Amino acid sequence: MSRLRAGIGLAALAGLTLGSSGQAEAYTVYVTNEKGNTVSVIDTATLTVTGTWKVGRRPRGVTASKDGKELYVCASDDDRIDVLDTATGKTLRSLRSGPDPEQFILGPDGNPLYVANEDDSQVTIIDIEKNKVLAEIPVGVEPEGMGLSPDGKILVNTSETTNMAHFIDTTTHQIIDNVLVDARPRFAEFTADGKFLWVSAEVGGTISIIDVATRRVVKKISFKIPSVTDEAIQPVGVRITRDGAKAFVALGPANRIAVINAKTYEVEKYLPVGQRVWQLAFTPDQKLLFSTNGSSNDVSVVDVEAGKVVKSIPVGLLPWGVASSPN
Image 1: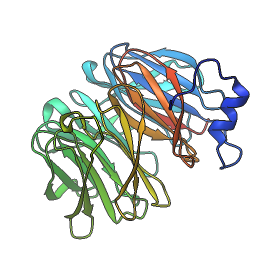
Image 2: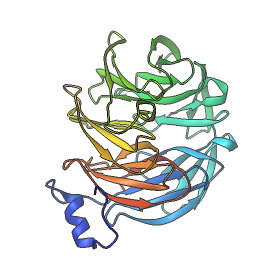
Image 3: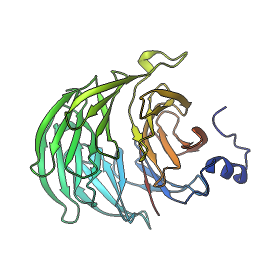
Image 4: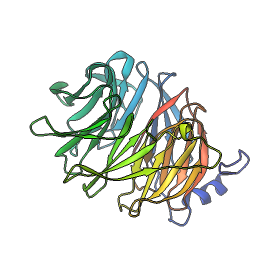
């Protein structure tokens, strides 16, 4: 059985979460609960929920500031982004997000914030410090996934209905290319060297690997799981290790995370997790990976080096987004 039973003590848990990778640092992980209108706060030292913070309606995308002092939360049904003090959990202010913000990504220096506005078919660029909209960029229908190249020069948005990855120049705010991918792309993730972009297609059931220089799809990864129908295998969240060795893909109602050799593109294993796995986030040291499991209202914790699930943590109703912070 991949999950720990409740009776296992903290000492045994610590041994499992550390694996062979040595002493793990303590971080904070934040989970948005879409139906609960809350954020669950998890201490990675104990793998327990230490707080629950109220936010706006239907929270989805979440990310921490570079210094970890602020947390940004897409309050999608309130058409705003809540900014929380991570020391107190109190809402400090709200940002002008545009309608229905779903996912977003911070610039390499922590400003600006690039936001996908699902209901308005646009990307909004926000200066966080001035709470000012810098640009609104028309994209395809139902924009969601947001990826940013490591140098911050190329922004990619995926449009779920148009089935495209839109490449945007962050200096000119102009679309420089549109790459067709499989049906309903949900997430975009650059490799750490900036050479490749991974795009998940929820309905298509694939990952498209795009060469960033040529903006051509050079590889597609598909998935087969014994006793699971193809229709239930729906790739959503994607995370790739900094060394480019491993990739992890959340497979939705298949209730699995795929572990992929990111050099050969071969699927190495499937990790059983909670029901309807959505999004993924590493801790800053990349020793642990957290997944949000929307239908089972929990978070699964993966020991990255060991390649196994070590714990399930109950959170709020319909957990959707997840982010980590160094403090």
